[in-house]
Figure (cartoon, rainbow, N blue to C red):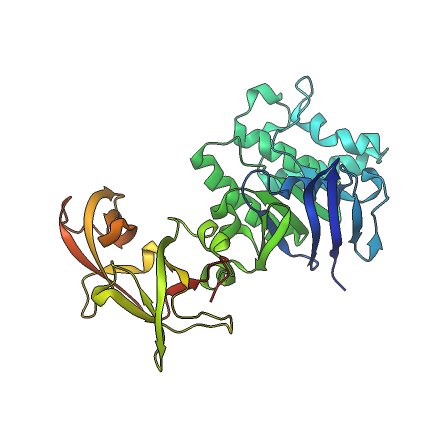
Length: 361
């Protein structure tokens, strides 16, 4: 049986539905990430798991126990918020110990748990400082330490790195991944940053307008997105999308036409049984990192607009016939200039195709 189970969970605010019949599960020790754009319902869903938001319909179970009507304090979960929510007049030690003191935990146990958490988070030298004396990353470590000492069954993270700069975000992602490995605890993590989702998650839940769009491992979502929405959300830089048309079908698969394609059309083998009649509108998806310059059998003819030197790689912004905008991520620093016409190739099996509804073909 799954450690965390959500069965058709919904949340309504008056006539507005913000979470719509979500069902999902997480195994014991799994790291699950909720990802999606602002307003998709991911934080509301997390708060319903924690008991901080009332559930309008459905049930939440933790470790085989239905906790839908159980008070937050009795669910044995710990939540780390986007804001650090530290008491400014207390030391780091006192902030970490506060919840344990409220639960009347014996003093010797409190000291042992603080020492263990401080060791794991490498904040032993900070225990006597006040929050104002800490950096943003250090404050977030203290907030996580406050969650660790409670020995919860389930850790919940609500965009905990949003207030940190880019370098600290990267560092803290590594620390949270190490923390998960050391504790072996079940964790549910909310973020709008797909890089965080891809690097941290065992499985990702992609949410859109309060509904689950797709659930899978990072590799599954990257390689086989179920929709244009997932394809565009997972991956950096974002996938290129070209509006095309089904021009025919033969033994090589569907013939898909677009002015940017060499020869005007390409062959794509569908992986589903969804209908794709001749003349229907489709969208071709091409990941920037899968496109290469030149090649014996080029796929696209493009005109360079701008080359962005990233050091070890170059991001090329180009335009194809018909005004199609295409981004390429190529290794090194190719000697290209704005206005130059170049050919781009693609490996086999790296073309994504979506029908008019946005579903993968």
